[in-house]
Image 1 (cartoon, rainbow, N blue to C red):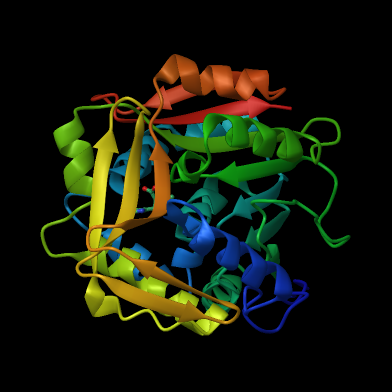
Image 2 (cartoon, rainbow, N blue to C red):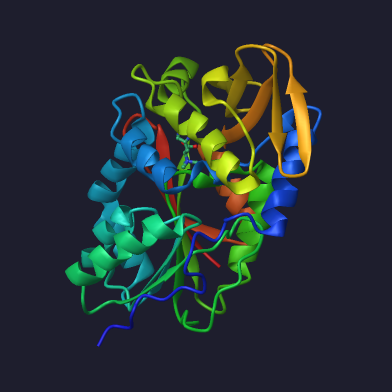
Length: 320
Ligand code: AVJ
């Protein structure tokens, strides 16, 4: 019998804990204000991200999917059956579900900061695959990776698709990968998707799409912060910006004040000049060799790198 879905929290875990409030407060007071991209994902944000993945401009999801479709059997051979599949930022769980028929995991552990959204996803998935033991966890794994005892130790495969690693600076990414590796006692591994450097016009279009879904996704972060920190952001006073910074090798998303304004939140206030910005996301793009280098400097050994024909995206399997 499959284990029931479980979670240590029965509400959204980012609901205004003291730590979350302190993090938001510090970012809003910083010289250049910043809000972590993890706050993009309330229930609506998770749905808007699903919509982004359907956009013609947003190439990563379908490019990565084409790599899984073409090389999935080879990946499954490299990994072997019976893995403890740990999905970091599982969202709608669709990517992992596509691997189940190839990978035959013994246990599926789906982790996401947006727990209400995750819970619905995993309940649907458990009905489709009743024989796979499933657990859903509402955790912010970006700063700390504490797995509860229900997560099997044996044959752990951490699954980190979609180039979410790009939200970290390379130094932060390496520290994060080391924490993952520390959770792979003997024989574990990592299957990771990493977006690659390409023509900046393609990157710019992917992060500022014609019908404004990415703009809505970015602006929705302000509504989420209003909820979490009791802030009074007026979304109409802000404009989305998503542009490739070639010097830094990353997409930067910002929210830019359309006019001079004042924001209040629980414990603070700040004025913004017209044109002043809040930095909300980095999305680093890697050269293939740099992606492998990042894994190796974090204690992993890359076994295979799969890319699409155009070289836009890479999926890498690495052993701990
Ligand atoms: C979920 C972090 C991989 O960086 O491409 C999509 C998020 N931001 N459009 C990315 C995102 C704007 C996405 N990741």
